[in-house]
Length: 87
Image (cartoon, rainbow, N blue to C red; front, side, top):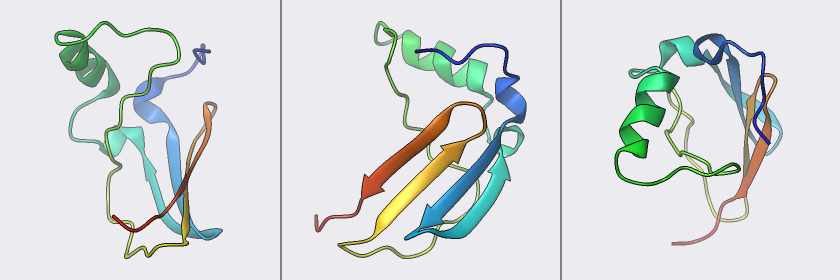
């Protein structure tokens, strides 16, 4: 589902490591704005509803270890939860 009615270039981002806020930023701080990123990726692949473009986030998130849980919340969009595993 696509979240509509949002200004994608001014959304609050929050990163949490094991429930502790370790990052607060905005999409306005990203090096390339959302439209530029979608445009670039779509030159190489056909984007379909539900696709995710992994971009990273502005700022640093700190060290993570296997067993940790890292969550990224994007205002008005939702939360992505990622368990950390050994590589």
